[in-house]
Length: 81
Image 1 (spheres, one colour):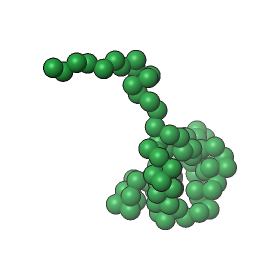
Image 2 (tube, one colour):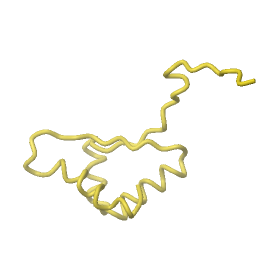
Image 3 (tube, one colour):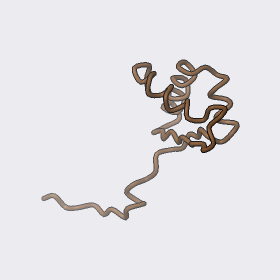
Image 4 (spheres, one colour):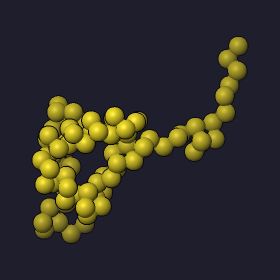
């Protein structure tokens, strides 16, 4: 998520408006704590703190570490020699 994604981000965050019956949730995956901080900072810059805080308080926006796909998919190393 970067400033260049502003239009897409604003559109996604418009889904939970006042008169919308069904709510959507957003999970932002991050690589490390620095990346989490950068992603949150970008959202705050694009959307403002009020909207980001409201989404987080309502549980619509969550930040989670990247899942370990190797473990999830039981991937084993392969000998390439």
